[in-house]
Length: 119
View 1 (cartoon, one colour):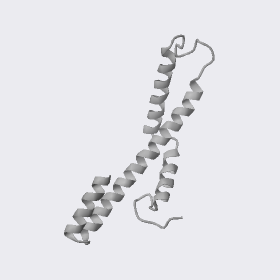
View 2 (cartoon, helix red, strand yellow):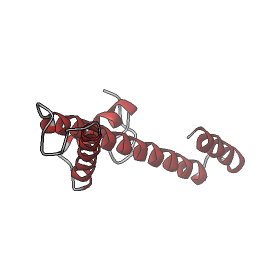
View 3 (spheres, rainbow, N blue to C red):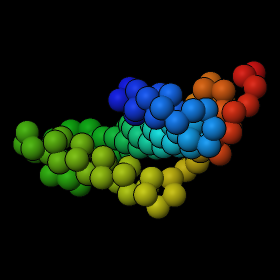
View 4 (tube, rainbow, N blue to C red):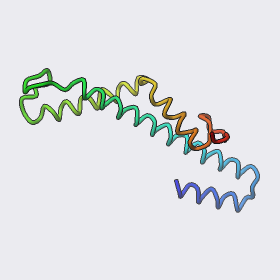
């Protein structure tokens, strides 16, 4: 990201502050928006993974996932991680959208990348 900003600054300085400057600003805003969206999606996935892990925990050594050895816990962990990832890929539960909007508010931009006033 730092390299992109350096390249953008050099391009704006060599061309001027006209259309090239606004294009560079657009690229930087798009990169920030993409990073914020990825962060929000990863947060939702981690939240779902934690929730599903609590749901699949069982008491004792016998269970539906064959937890009578050391590999049962590892398998359950991998399975809940995959379940969480698939739920997020299919649309999630809406946590990522809310987190994304809050990240964009903190950055002082709207969800479409336009600059807005900080609240």
